[in-house]
Length: 272
Ligand SMILES: C[S@@+](CC[C@H](N)C(=O)[O-])C[C@H]1O[C@@H](n2cnc3c(N)ncnc32)[C@H](O)[C@@H]1O
Image (cartoon, rainbow, N blue to C red):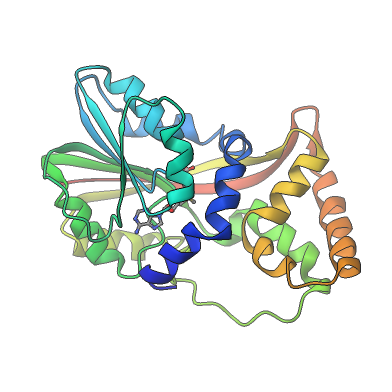
């Protein structure tokens, strides 16, 4: 998908689904969010840009960290998600813009993102543009997904559903999308090309909490991510059998804390 298609995607059914699943998605990422925030270490008085801020959860947490003497701007291309963000009483500015090309003021101490920077069609140019939003010595800190094979929350639902789907064409592993930065060497090169100094990529082993109950976990697996796109094209009986197979897989990961599947992320930092 190029940037135009991403804008269409995040403003269409996918953006609406993300907006409606915001509480569940935040719960799913509950293990990851404190890690990336402590890694980014927003301090009182700092100016922060939250890239691909979505429904504003991290924007809100960043605003609490920087306090009244600081400021936070959340930027996103998705109107449905920004609409949610704007109704949550968050003490931040929300900007509807393409972070890859928007002309930001070079005032930010911290350029932050929770899973919002993997969708650029020209990542080096986009990260160079984000660097232009940082003040001299300003820092970049974000979390993105590591290798697909270590992210069972993403692969296992698709594996379970595969018998019910038409063969899928092979995909370009570097194409814009959640796993675009799985290759840490490529990611480091992108940041260097964009002019960021001292890029560092650190693994974070965590889980995605798919739901407190099997029903919740199943709804999330079918409505968000790769299955959401293909499932609507299936007839009702195939969809029911697919749903049963995905449910049976999720059940294996059930514990008293709900259903959690292994996840592996990269915590990424660099300096302007
Ligand atoms: C996986 S979601 C993450 C949302 C949010 N950061 C969170 O953690 O809940 C990716 C977000 O990036 C946004 N996004 C994608 N491309 C973008 C771009 N070029 N400029 C700004 N936002 C973008 C999407 O609209 C979406 O809100």
